[in-house]
Image (cartoon, rainbow, N blue to C red; front, side, top):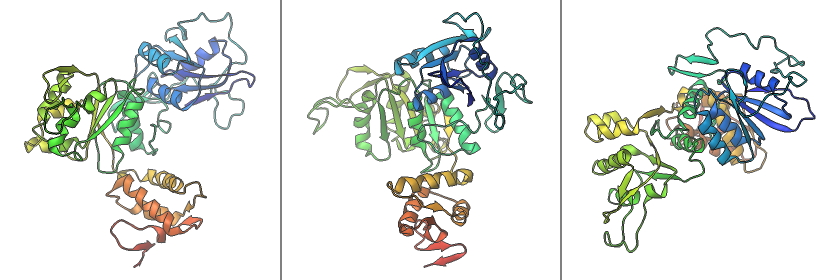
Length: 415
């Protein structure tokens, strides 16, 4: 995110969405912008995050966004944020497509602020960096182009963690969220798969609609079909009135199928047909209902292994995994542990003074394997807060692991 210093007597908050900071700079120089704050988003998905978190009066959209269609994004913004004025910018001349530029650039000239440079000037703005081309960097780890300057600045609603592994996840979510592509989220228990699913929904054009959650492992096999597809009155004993079902209830919104690996094999053909035809039939009814819903699923098991064992349909797997998204376990991103632990302490403090996490306790946390991932860390920090008994600092003696029956202080075990 690049912030531009603006004359303090101006009023509007302005957001510029473009993959190029040079384009952003030249747009601002060519317009008679009245603003007290200007920020630069590298793409359409990042712009939506800024719009969600702040109050903006103007949005300038580069027609050549790297991730979203500018025309479609303009309509989405106008519907979701009617108070924001949206201006399309032609990439060729870096000027707004909707308005004619003034006769001369306004004063003072706006330039990106540079840390340690109080003047706010930087004559290196137009110089390209090694490995950089047209505002993009190639990320070897994930094998796709990511936005220039995105590292360290990308985030998702409700998600905590700035590690490189999570930044890669955030960027993938931002790229796929505006589309209707089916997404399969994989990762171990407690890693935050539902939070990612909610972020996909919140960053999509369906955000104002329903987000329906179905845990396929929590509903008995005999009831799951009725719960998903609904039923008509009299379809079975006890069906005294019709029920629309979770899929139809999510019409125009998002359906999140958690623990999809536990879906009974007998029900999988019906789900596959719905994904292919976008139509369903309630139990006991011959009426076909067309439903417009985006499907996201999640699992903590290896679905391909289930396919090989004959427990999961191969065609359904490929339908669900049009865009696979793997969430790394907590042990693979120890850099996030401190921020997560501090967040948990603040959350469970209930408005009371939040204790500080000692360096020894943090080292202890980073040394753990965390089989329960973020959910396990959350439980450990809640217990630590209770054991601290109002003390100002969380120490290793307060960290009690699940099922251990003891606490640890450094290398000492207290039974």
